Image (cartoon, rainbow, N blue to C red; front, side, top):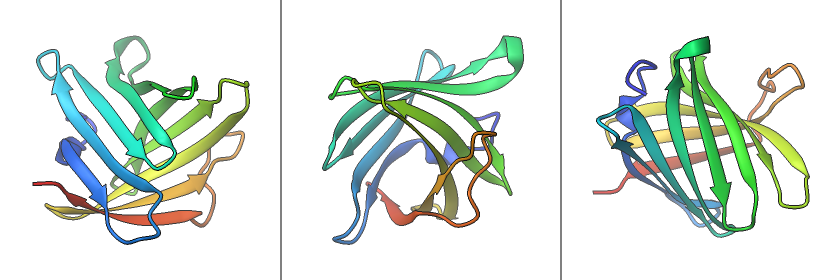
Length: 138
């Protein structure tokens, strides 16, 4: 996260507004700041994840699992100066969906998160399918 310029994400973030699907997401350092733990909670359920630097191919990767038996694997990168996660989630039934999540820092306590469909070549769609405002939980 630090290498990707995304240390500002460390902490707990909550959506604002009644129509928000995502309730909260928390990022916390672990193992002497070598990995980041992820705790995601929404109306649909909960998931846990781990973000780490994979030295052999110089990538920042994320793995996760949810309370419905699903799993996920993704890669972090930079899109126009914003931390971006391309993440593929596979349900317990074997159905997969790939999404792009772009985190835009508005200020120290506010972030805008944009969700995109992702093509087979891992490219973000032209327009976000969902946009949510997050505030840092104090």
